[in-house]
Amino acid sequence: MASHLSSFYDCPPKIRLVHQEEDEHIELFLRQHWITNISWLATAFLGILLPILLISLKSFIQSVVSFSIPIDLYLAGIILWYMFILAYIIESFLHWYFNIYIVTNRHLVDINFWNLLYRDITEVRIADVESARTHIRGVLGPLFNYGDVVIETAAERQNIQFFKVPNPDIVAERVQDLQENTIGTGGNE
Image (tube, rainbow, N blue to C red; front, side, top):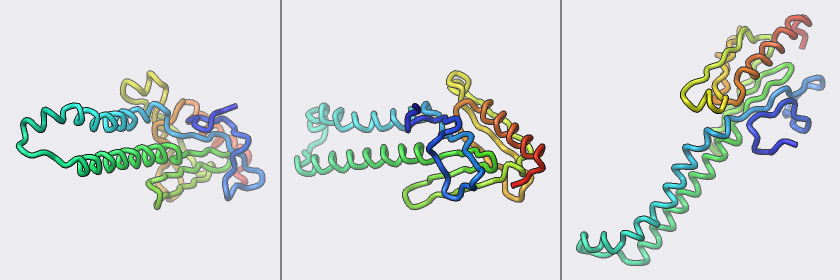
């Protein structure tokens, strides 16, 4: 059984699209690789530690500065800081969790979650796919086997990209196989 936080689902049985056709089934359900969360998690961790560091340096700061900050103002600042850090953590997690890429036997769907108030969805027919290629960059990409999949289409819409997905070679190969099967069956939808 796969975790709800997984980045790579192959033929997930219980996931459906809102506008999914009767004979359409999901081949791949993808998110960015989990390792891409390390940067915002490290930033949040440092943000959590910053007030603790400032509290430990409070006596030093008061000896350098001629005035002291009232404890109520100090406490209010710490509470606001932690609220900001919590909002940052929630927004970063939601951005990772709801930015999803779906490959079905008929369509490619790219759902971009920008924030709680805005998202955009791009959908391309498999029959319009011309090629799929991968870009694996940096040190972590090859080490953790993640990268970008760029899918070029014949449609008027621009190319579709799956950013920092796990197993990009498998994803590109699956898209190419589906595209070839669609051409082989006459591209019937």
